[in-house]
Length: 206
Image (tube, rainbow, N blue to C red):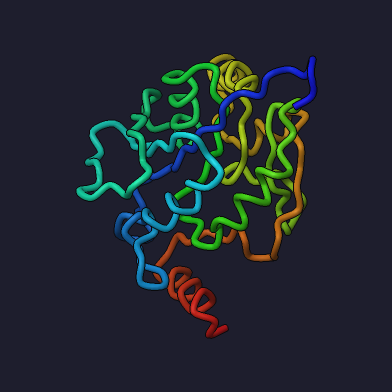
């Protein structure tokens, strides 16, 4: 950092794991890829690029019985299950002044290399840095860096304009967009069928 440059806010990690996984039929954090559960894989990917790492859960959701090494604590959604935006807003509310690398639990290909690529492209002068979707070129909100300056903007758009979609919010902001390192880096898994395809790809079978 050059003398006179503004201080860059600490980058913490927020692992979004508060969804109910209705289509999958079980907690996505327990899905196993390459002989490891997705919770452990995600935390390990974040450890090299984040300060503290927090698990985002919905209210009354049980905390995992075995928390992976590197998890500082839990952030409980304070906004009544409004989707992932509630988890992000709750993190800003609990730890004001921090920036957040947000990662959804259902992204099995978003490993350390994908997160490192994003962090290296981080532009703290913008409210957020996000990957550009392969189809459509829109910002991908579930693997993105939300700067500390964006917390007020997100809260304003949520409370006063009833915008619940993080993607819609990012579209409305002057975000830094980054091309993903490969075509499937941000593919998520919502069903058992998608999970099986992901397992085969990770194993190099397709």
